[in-house]
Image (tube, rainbow, N blue to C red):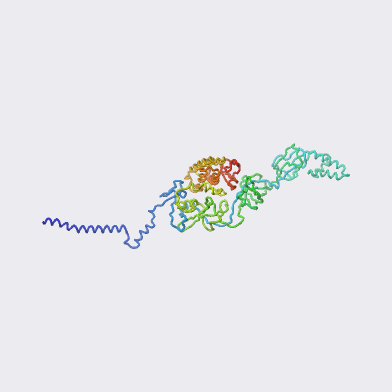
Length: 616
């Protein structure tokens, strides 16, 4: 009995201990969880807010996405080089929910990497530099026909070749004239009866004078008493013989021209003015011009006459400048290159922006306007209405005001960033989903048709000269060789062949390794690259020769700029131009032959055009 009691007593004593232990453990666990969950909440107000501040400003744990401004489909968690083009990746900017949903934000670092430059919009007088080509010609008012005043046979020529100088009154030829011999005999007979019939004598005397014999010559004939068989033809003017029309022994008629003589102390410089430039050229404009054969010398003069009609074959009008040429430096048929600083006739102040600031597709033209905040720079796309093309700049008719700041370099990078963020851009004016790739086919054939023959002109802008690696030059040369095959197919008006060659040209273009170019050279290569690819795609996918040639119009000036900037591997390239192509707006192409073989007309007008520049 006692043993049983001894056994049960410990059980009764252990129950309260277990309860106490469980209670204490629960309290400890509760305190621990409370500290973990509310960690620092039991302290002062400063200790309460410290973790919140850290969570708000410490982005060390956040992931930054890095992308390429030219290839927005590239997204990487770490900085580095673009796997497509080799450019430095830039951080992808997050939309901060600003007031303007169209604005694309860019950090100063991203702007520097993308070579973005801006400048304020200014208002001023629009001036366009018009380039004119022409050549020296003799002043038509100073060109004379030296004729013989007596009929007969050429017995002697004192001027034997063109270019020889003739002085007024000097003999240029000697003529045997039976008629003149007879007239002299009549004069001798009339002299014998001069006292009886003075009128007959006077008539015989005047007959010789009508044949341009001078009084001194006639008096010498009378003194000698014998008729002369050869008479000199005296020069009527001083100048240079430009054309010799007879040879010794030829029989000539009275009044027949034997020489053309020009006074070259004043010459004309006749410039070709294309239809598109005619509104800019006015009588009285100052022209500054140079002659390739006279390096280092500059000439100038004022336009004193403009043709009232256009040549139907060349589609140009002539603008004339009369130049003093006392030292005979300027010789007829010399080629000259001139420039005219032409202004609009209205002389009103206009908004003028650099050509590099404007992006266009079809009839839409846009610029990017800069918006600056305390810590960020933003750009908003704005559509503008273009006025006249000033060469390196445009007049803006609508869309901009003086004082606003716009991007003038790197606009393509801004537009790529806008597409990446789904903001309004050149190709997507309404915005949309963020871009997932570089859309090379965004310009369709229909859009190309809507461009109404608008073509990029090389104009007179300075093209930078980059030191491209030899490997890149060889790749660019391989692409150019394929381009020539495509161009020759258009010369032959073979649409099927042009389509096949365009496919090969597109492949050759894609095989050019743009990663070989760095910095500004890379950015320049990327400019308008999508337009080149789009034009080649249009040509390759169509067998309509008209559509192919329309796409070809826009392609050529871009290719010309690329070749001029980077050069080719041992190639001479002729940049050629036809003023009648593209509905008389003119169009360019490149060739390895100096002779004109027009790709826009084929056999119909094979030789229509001219060489505008040679890249050696």
